[in-house]
Amino acid sequence: MTSKNIDVYTLIQSEICKLRKVGIETASLDCRLLLTKSLERHKILHNHEYIDITNKEIKNFKYLIKQRIAGKPVSRIINKRNFWKMEFKLNEGTLDPRQDSETLIDAVLNHFTNKLQPLKILDLGSGSGCLGLSLLDEYPNSEASFFDISPKSLKMVKINALNLGLSERSQYVNLNWKANNWDKKLLTIENNIKYDVIVSNPPYVPTDIIQTLKKEVKNFDPFVALNGGKEGLDAYKFILPKLINIIKSNGKIFIEIGKGQQCHVISIATGHGLSLKEYRKDLSGVIRVIILNVK
Ligand SMILES: C[S@@+](CC[C@H](N)C(=O)[O-])C[C@H]1O[C@@H](n2cnc3c(N)ncnc32)[C@H](O)[C@@H]1O
Image (cartoon, protein in one colour):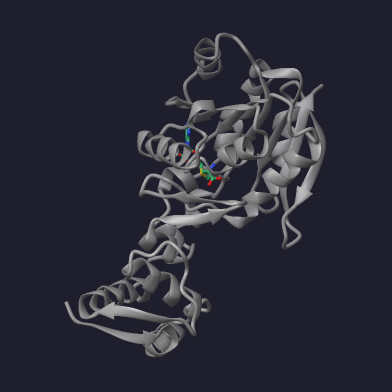
C-alpha cells in the first residue's frame, strides 16, 4: 500500500477551515483527534509532526470530518472522553462526561482527605462510570457500586473498570430509582452495608428544554440521561427521600444540580432527614454540587 510522508498541519489545514466555517471553535484540536483516530494511534498528533499516511487513511479521516461537520461531537466519533485524570470509553447508552461534573470529585477529595481510608462508594446514575471510577483511582482501598437503569451504560462501566484496572473493586447494579423499594433492593445486594460516600449526577434538564439544547447534546446524549421531567427535579424527588436509608450516619452525599436548582433540591433533602453541609461552584461560578449529611 502506497503511503506519503507529510506533516500533520499541511494535512489538516483545509479541514480546519471547513470546521471553522460551521462555527466549530475547537477546529484544530478536533482535526488532530480525528486524524489520530483515522491512523489508530493512541497518542494525539502534533501539528509539526511528520507522519506516514495511506490514501485509505486520508479517506477515512475525511469521512470522520464529514461526521463532525454534521454535528456529531468528537467524543462520539472516537467513542472516548477524558475526565478528571483518566480516559473513559463511551457508547450510545452513556452520557458524554462533562467537565462541570469534576466539581463532584474535587468536593469528595476535600471532604475525605485521607486517601488510604477504605470508603464504600455509590455512584448513582453512573453512565460511563466516570465519577465512581475516578474516586476508586483516588482512593486505592475503596470499593464502589455503579447503579444505573441502563444495561448499555453498565456494560460500558464494566469495560472502563477493566481497562483502568479497577474492576476488582467495582460492582454493577441494574436498578430503577423510580421503583418503590429500590433502597431495600440495593441494601440486600450490599449485604446491608451502607455507604460512606454517595455521588450522583442525575438527569436534571426540564423536558421542554431538551429540544432547545445544542444538537451535539440533544441528538447524541441519551434522553434518559438528560430528562429531569417537567421542572427538571423528578430524579431528586425519587432519589433524595431514600438516601437516609442507605448512607452511614457519618457518611456524605454529593449531588450535582442544574443551574438555579439549589433551593428546590435542598428543600427536598432537608425534608427527608438530610442537612446541607456545603455547596460548591463549578469553574464558571455556577452552584453545581450540594453536599449533604445526616441530620
Ligand atoms: C446525567 S447522567 C450521569 C452519568 C455519569 N454519572 C456522568 O456524570 O457522566 C444520569 C444517569 O442516570 C441514569 N438514570 C436515569 N434515570 C434513572 C433511573 N430511573 N434509575 C437509575 N438510573 C437512571 C441514566 O441512565 C444516566 O446514566
